[in-house]
Image (tube, rainbow, N blue to C red):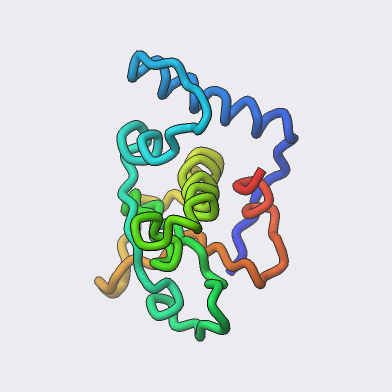
Length: 153
């Protein structure tokens, strides 16, 4: 099932990002300079957990080649981001830029812009108590839907 994501103007997305960075700077009493401390913003300010995992194995999608097709996934209900293990900057420092972009996409993009669209009714409960499914899976091979374009922007 595809979730309807309303149109957001570029300016609205930019204002949202600027507000997020300003909120973080005010809460921490810091002046933000490049590079943006995306890990701190995601973990300390947005209170999201970051995990590395084999996203292809996790979601049952075969991996083709060296580059992952599934870069990250957002689990809104658990306030959790899963990033493909091949982007771990400790293990693969040359991929730090791709890691930081993916983290910004998941936390700064999806969490800030889209979590209200995926919020579940607390009165509803799962029929079976299995593991939570991700709300958004970012696949580079798929046509870019509005939800991904907005998070990327």
